[in-house]
Amino acid sequence: MKFPPPLQAGDTVAITCPSGYLPAARTVFAQQTLEAWGFRVRVGATVGHEYFYFSDTDEGRLLELQQFLDDKKVKAILMGRGGYGLSRIIDRLDFTSFKRHPKWICGFSDITVLHSHLHARLGIASLHGPMCAAFKDVNEPAAHLQSVRKALTGVPIDYPITGNRYNRTGVAEGQLVGGNLAILAHLSGSASQMKTKGKLLFLEDIGEYLYNMDRMLYNLKRAGMFDQLAGLVLGGFSDMKDTERPFGQDIYEIILDKVKEYDYPVCFEVPSGHLDVNYTLCLGQNYRLDVGKKKVKLEQLS
Image (tube, rainbow, N blue to C red; front, side, top):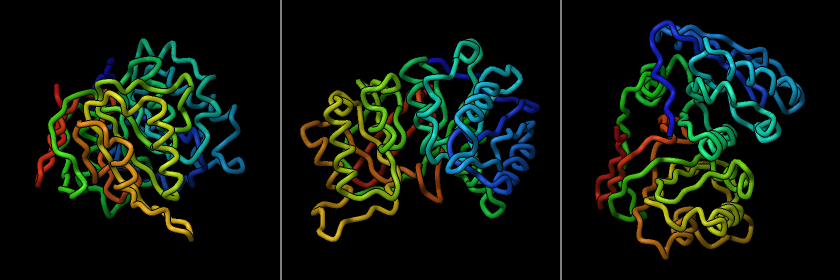
């Protein structure tokens, strides 16, 4: 796994919207915070621009992301928001320059398309973490927002994880990979599908019906993504919905049912994903997961 270099004071962070539309006002505090941290900021033309559901046409979003990937002065790219749209352009991106000069990509949700592609095709680490909307005046000192700064500058992050009665105890080490469940299921069978053997797989999602969660998890299971994991790490599963006729299991039971034949540790309630408290995870980094009956620790390894 290749790791982009840590950022230094004066380095440039670019902000772009390669998927959905984001009002420009929602990036203002992100820009101010990044500058207060000592970075220069470049805001792309896709920010505040709209083209139906998207921030721009496929060509416009592709062009801007490509420019930031190629620009050697840009040391990190913070995504404005997720939504939908990256899978429409991922196969047309040219990573030739990026492979020689990797930089941190930070985002989650639909940005999982890019995370998964980087790991599957290029072996380059990236950051699953807050995007521009998370940067607000009220939470700037918050530890989860400071985790972005730590990740960009190479400082280890402490993750506050509470115990959960559905957890399966055990200790495991491995490369942390994953992201949004719906996107990973969407990428199954594509050139962007990551390999999970021997790794810690992280999953999160929001606003899905329980039956659809069951279907997407079966998609991953049938693709072999649960077979030889080191461990399973579950983040936020916010706003889960049920149909008028109940599905019959909650989200914890649905997930555990898919991995019942395996003996690796399973950890719920990791504070990452579509949550108000969304900690940055370094995808591609080696982590140690220690799931006890009362305490859980997720620790970055050197």
